Length: 126
Image (cartoon, rainbow, N blue to C red; front, side):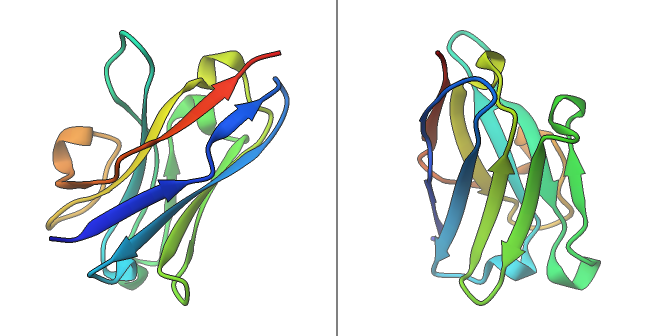
């Protein structure tokens, strides 16, 4: 069973930055599209960003609210996918998850994903 582990969350002031990491064991991340999702209390899980696999050009995609502020990237040597988040807002507060689909392309739809990490808390507050 592939395992994903997120890290890098924390408490940050509005306008601050965080870099989340998604590390894998048991499989190579570069052959899968990888998505980042978040879930705030009382809300549904939503897609934030995803990146296509290495054969498909490692193309990044973002939800509109993340464009210009978040950057998704891969470090295949470290078998890790990052989500760099800048200019954070209180509404970005949520548990952030990374995920991979068992097969097929990625998307911002969490229902397309099969393997999930345990999540990392991001809190944006003054």
